[in-house]
Image (cartoon, rainbow, N blue to C red; front, side, top):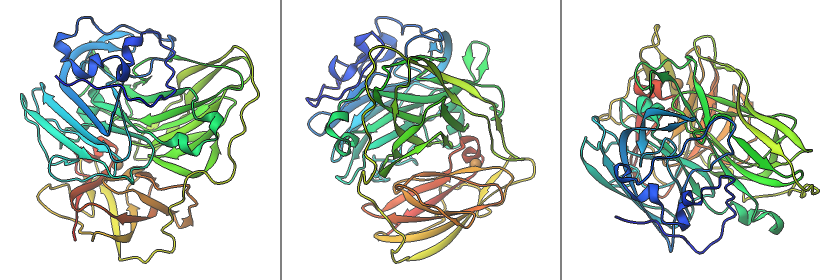
Length: 481
Ligand SMILES: [Cu+2]
């Protein structure tokens, strides 16, 4: 059994939760390194309103992170109840994997489900071939697969995630619980010295529908009432001091739903989006997290008192889904006050801009669906793993027009390489970095520029509303020399 090891670098990861055994990088990483069936004690229970508990972390050391993930249906604590769920290492919210550029991740996955599974490291610039981020791998029941991810030195700091990408059952598996957070360290280097060791929280946004004593996995209706959890908890309490600055890793690791996140009376200061550091810190009253999206934000404690982290009502169109407003967490500002630290207003991280780059090819990608919403298409075709739909050339930049012919939004996502969002419905878009997800408006279009660098091989682009992906809205791209 491999044990994750504590690396020397000190990250100010404040866990308001008092059970220090969960800070695995430095304590042995019980949940990450022991098969759940042999866990000596059951996972503790966290009722609504309890202090926010950050997921356990496993942290790379000397350029290596070794992780064992056992995939198993188990009865575990979810939102303060005991429910049957699909788990990695017996947890509804599995360990956060912390890596750095140039690291190698050795990840051994053992499948104890009665169906196939596999793994995707969402947003990471890494090879899609062999035993790396190869979503064509099927890990059959009872099998173990050894993934090896060799990350480049160009890996960008921010928040990413991992989840099942098993076709055509990714929605049931992710909705069942098979998703977790990945952090690429390094955002702190862009912050002023006085903000490099601030308290940090993972805010993993994961929802579940209930079916008896189980997290529902089959027959998922996207608009059905759902329970929105943060790190598997219902409305946890996040402590902050008035004027204190914290770094929050907002990650939509749900299967199908959108979040429109808002912190009452406060603003988010965005330092990274989809694992790409911002070229300058920008502020927002609310942030739309389409399926698969992440934002790293600075939050500053307001006057003493309680405010709510909410998701605001959002509708993805007449043929889509209506998501009601919901409370995600409560921010409790108390303790000694301090003047909020000034945040950098000019440049933050280096800017990548493809606006004036030579374009090697232009393509149109059309998202559509059939009349009863049971079949989903890209360029008129459902996904076929044995067909190559797009062949971009390595070391080129392409411009894609992603058109949505349907009556609902879709969350466009590319593997391996991120893209620059150039325009939405013809209006130029001034982004602050590359991204790997973007919502495509109803009967509208976005234009993106995508650079194919470092890796050749077969991978995919798809809608990250996983019900849609499973119903065909995915295409194969093979990056060639
Ligand atoms: Cu979709």
